Length: 355
Image (cartoon, rainbow, N blue to C red):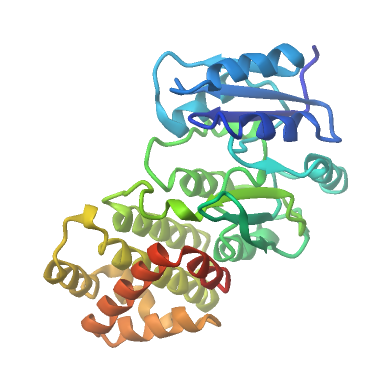
């Protein structure tokens, strides 16, 4: 088989119920010139067998069985090692794409050859009985850019819409990626955004599509039992600091950039405060309040807090509490959000959509 135009690298772990649908959504794309690389990351279920079954039915499929579990970043890196496409993308193995998603991306490249193509997503929230409870489309207006100066103001706006960090809503120029020798870092939660920031740092072309063909599956009934990351706050402060440094390096740290970063900062700080309410944090209420007090001494707080200005009433309110250094109000808000998130997850999802 000749080298494909697109390589699709799909890490696989613990998704035997969803893997066939995810793979079929790639293999049934109207754009056919692709390869699908399934990276079995030592999945404990039947995923390895399912990968082999899928490959037996379509010669465009390659299966890479890793000898030991190395995590998402390693799986993607290993998939890149054997990929041969001109462009590359990284969908998750429990989500799926509309049939014309890749064709739309390729069509955009005919109009404007670009280092990266970005598209939107459809968030799908499922309840405890695995029924679709709510959906929201996240998109950005269509733009084709062919210069650094034109595209750079939009990178922060993509991050504001949550569209920058994800890897599965992008098509990357694989030659450029190899030229820059980019790899995914082995770090929890923020591996995607770190990769994206590194990739966009010097690119001179970008296509943004307003369509939302990627279906992001979110099981909202798992909020009580989901993975708990103790250093959630520290990791997301790295995320914000990296974005700030990116714009400082570009000489484009405008008031708009600081406003967007400030609003994102409030979102992540609030999420950290509510996560501290989880028993797994092992933090007493006194320790949680001490954490909040410590925020006011950080450089990011001092740099960003006075720029908070959001259309979201929740972000505006929480930003006001933080600005006034009202520890008790911040604590009670976090506690309230934690209760709603875990006791009324469907309501929480709908409120979150109002961002």
